[in-house]
Length: 364
Image 1 (cartoon, rainbow, N blue to C red):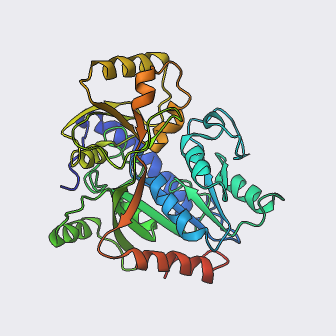
Image 2: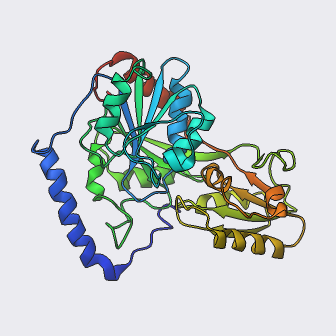
Image 3: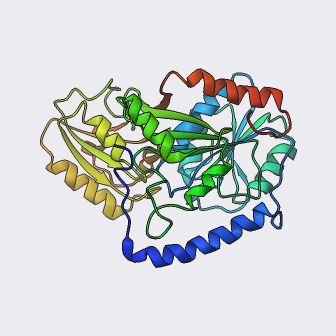
């Protein structure tokens, strides 16, 4: 059911109260205009959340890329979390995970015909994308994870909410995982409840609608995850597979914030799954590689390792993976699909904004 993964550290609630005072003051300064939220002469769409990781920003950003790139020159601007460079970096075919971060690297690999840039300062990144000779033909900019970056006012603010960690049930950091109070939902033009199970009943939709209590101008959508063919990570591995057959013993190897829905979905195909989870954006150390090798070796045959696209970008660089692990390591690509037949409605609103609003405005 929705909200079933919310865990609150009650003893940290006093610190959450202090954190909330600071967030409220910052938001008030923006609301009063003391801190400036700047608009730009180009359509800007933000995909973000109120929680720390795990809502599916990358697959939703990739959905927008697929929707827009046949007609428009698209740029994605990200912070490039955990990269080892500073300042503005425009990704090229030679860029590494260390230079731009795992999620931008994944998108650059999948969509080489769009611009991928990273910059801690979204303002500076937008200005570079719009003015630099090599990117100045950009038509629309997608901001990755900039809901809290209020120095930029996007034309469309898309807020993602994890079905399993409803913001209405969560608490502020550090007791919970909220970056901002749930009242900050009001800044969103669209709210997307992500990672939904495929069998939600009509009453389930209505319960969530009541919980979120959106304003009339805010549009609510629901998405679930759709998995594609397993792909061999290393070129010397076996051929790609459609899905696990059900007879394999599967290790689910992840370094993402919320692997729970992936585990639930895989149980439809696999009877025996061994989760091996690391923190979000985790770089695999020699000790981690040794743990992976040993745990896989202890699993009975036939055996298989499944990982995410984001983790694959870092596992490619991990040294010391055994030949058996490399042979058995597969990537499970994921896409989002809209529920209740609302894909067309969502697409029309996004395409309408970009087409009809060459300068920033909100979605009607």
